[in-house]
Amino acid sequence: MCHVTQMSRGEYFPTWLVEGGAVHTECLLQKKLTWSTQTYEDCFRTGGGRGGVIPNFRSYYDSTYGYTNGLKKGELRECGGFVGNSDTEATQKAGGADPSHLYYDTGTVAIAYIINKAGITSQQFWQSNEFGKGFWNTIVPFDGHDLRTGYPGQCPEDKGWKKSLLAITKHATVAEFYAEFDAWAKTASLADVVAILETQSAIDTQTAGVFDLSTATEGTDHDPCGSATQWPPSPPPAPPSPPPPPLPPPLSAGSSLSGVVSAVVAAATVVLAGTGRA
Image (cartoon, rainbow, N blue to C red):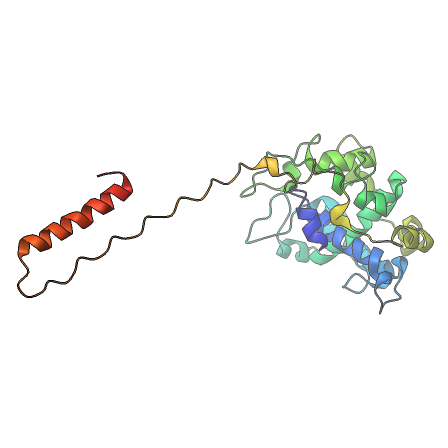
């Protein structure tokens, strides 16, 4: 359901924000499951679906590929041979990186880093529609994306996902954010990552009630499906067709051919009258 909420914003998001966002919500809400006792920090240490968010994040930056290319290459994942401004998975693996460690785990740590840097909460990042505090619910989609041959990084700095992100991080460009994050990530230890995480008591407070990402926006300003006025009303249904005329009676012995012709002409007249062409 996290991806449904993300995509409902109508924007072409970087893969690291989409997949990292999904793992981030997993860590946020894991303890709410009746069968789980995993805390927010535990999820970063050992969870996330791939043996631990932090170990995998460290693995990415320890690789030659990750150390050289950083988070930006996570903007698009190879799909059908198309890589946009990223690289093929073969190239990433040749540089010692596991591609999933970039898109999922490094994306998750990047979101935690953004939240910590901005002094906001995870709840604000996900639910607030206040520009400069919330991300997902402040998005005004950039309408210039080419969804066939384009990629998320082509979004202008003052539009779409970049505008909302930069309002939170206070950088002038996304490139500046990437440079700052990469410089920190290259040497960040497990303890360094844990230090930027919100406390469990803070997470418990934020998630005590219903943590509904899909209903956070007030009104329909940022919901591409929320306003009925965006689409023209459907035309009224066409009137039903007139019933077919009765068939002429069967020709009985002794009936004249002229009588049959008269019956056929009468039937045709009824049809034409029903269509307005008589």
